[in-house]
Image 1 (cartoon, rainbow, N blue to C red):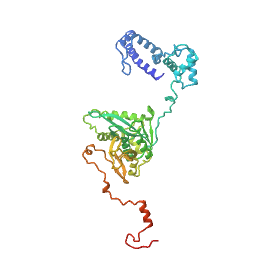
Image 2: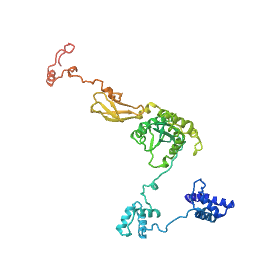
Image 3: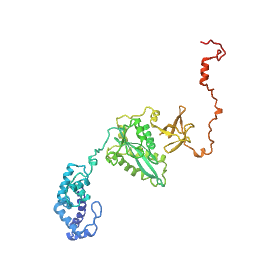
Image 4: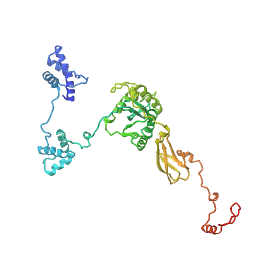
Length: 442
């Protein structure tokens, strides 16, 4: 018995049992049926069922004769796939789908019209219902039935780390917040979390750096297509670190079901107490402390329903050694992104929507800008030195005097020697040197 029909049969049995109980208590069968029909009975799950006396007579009779199978609804299978479409068209549809499974239904309808198969006016929706009943391939070959979608699980810790962002509201003002949580795939151990105001590449990479400093490098990182993940900075930094980044496919629950299930748990345990609470500090630093306290002292030390152990015990007892970075200073250099920017005529460049003042002399030129994601600074190389640029202060620029270029008379220049002077000095060199000594001409 299919599960759907079995659920219906069990639901009906809950009402039939009420009738049988009244009959066992001394009521007649007819009176018991009428009493139950008038009282709006409930099934075994507590759901109210509206049923007539005639239907109750039929259910009880069927149960006594066939048992639970007698309470299953009868299937209404038509002898033909369609009452409207002709047999010739249905045969043509079946044949063409067998020869060309990727052909669309409108294409098959046009083929039939050109070949004169079926003289009636054919509706696309009618053909779709007929193809569905005939179990013909309706969708293209790139559908879910043709996609190799598999659930995955890794053996050891830090081989695969899952990360996703959970959006929520915080405080009585319901401020927008997002929590990034890193989960080890093999042990379900939460490595840490970070709370921010919105998803961005800099926010994600900053949270990733905190995980690397504490637990070391992971072999692979599974993320979705959020704005904080699907950006060039993320791919560039992870490629430098040697981390294999996997972007999950859209609508691929088998790939990220573990972290989606964790999001449900975190919503029930953590997020519910934060939303609309007058006692909660909605600042990102305060929420980050609360989040990591929950992950470390509650979730990681709670027995996981699937692995039957605590994530902390699984992670600590794993024999695979952690890959800690040898030098944090060298590792930080992987988070420096080099970009080209053109300097405006008023000595300004724009990086990530922020204007920065450039030194004098770069107007109209293209310069290499070094953006340090972790330190949130922008630098350029000036006179063979790296200098940190400051954001433009428009109020200060309105009062500070402008710098003026030096006049030509103030610049000390060496005398310019013409070609005639050079030729004369070549033929008539002085007999006395610069120190006053005498020398003979060679």
